[in-house]
Length: 128
Image (cartoon, rainbow, N blue to C red):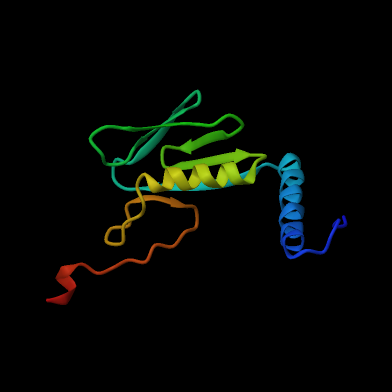
């Protein structure tokens, strides 16, 4: 692959375009995946069609409609896997679902990426 000119903008976009094309090719051969864990008493997820329902401690369940091209698999009520050929779409969907209930530092409850380590804080009982 070669550039038409050697301007700073063309040089900076050359690597970006190369990486985007590479991610597309890799995604077609083996879909990109993001895994999420749901931690908390009574926290769970269920999938019906393209609608993901999350019960994560709010009064009403949270409803997430999956975009076209993304496949969701609920392994058990506390583990989710998103997969698609589009790396950006999978990462954005996983980030949006995680932002619905981020892991909190005192009890660790919430939605986190698989393998993510949440730094825990001691409560006020530790200080006295």
